[in-house]
Image 1: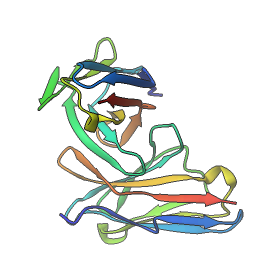
Image 2 (image 1 turned 90 degrees about the vertical axis):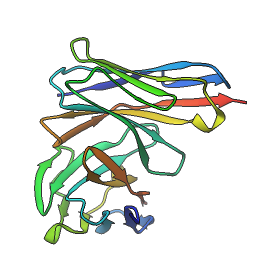
Image 3 (image 1 turned 90 degrees about the horizontal axis):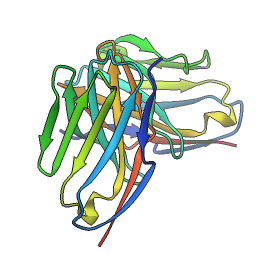
Length: 111
Length: 112
């Protein structure tokens, strides 16, 4: 296992800009989660994929957020028209069996 | 809506002490419960997973218990070490694996 990778690791953007994050799960892990984590809080569930199918989407995920997982491999999370409240760590995890393997996260700062 | 609470929010103990971390959840219709640790600036690492039909799981110095009826789980750490210093998070799975709710975590500091 090479581990879950996320890119970029850090992103600074201006309010109103669009940003896209990428998650490369461990190969052959068919389930994948996205979370958002702010300082001092636990991760908040955003969305869940099984293969390419997005099976669950949190109400936290407004219309400005969209996630994809084409061909059941890597996944992308896009935020349109970013707001300062979107500043957070965005975490991705892929799953084997019952165990989630987390990536290092992408830290987003919206100025 | 599932809500998960962890008490205490922070804990500082001397090395060698045994300790218990608590996790409470409001909806007992859970699928699984999992404990993680998070080191500063890093992602989460899975420690133990308890399925809803189980009452406890053990791994090394860690023991996690689950009481669904009371909506509680505890993580017991024996003979704590400075390397155990981290934030410990519990996560509750509902509706299969499709919904996950994390607690706010307990920040543990083990003093040498």
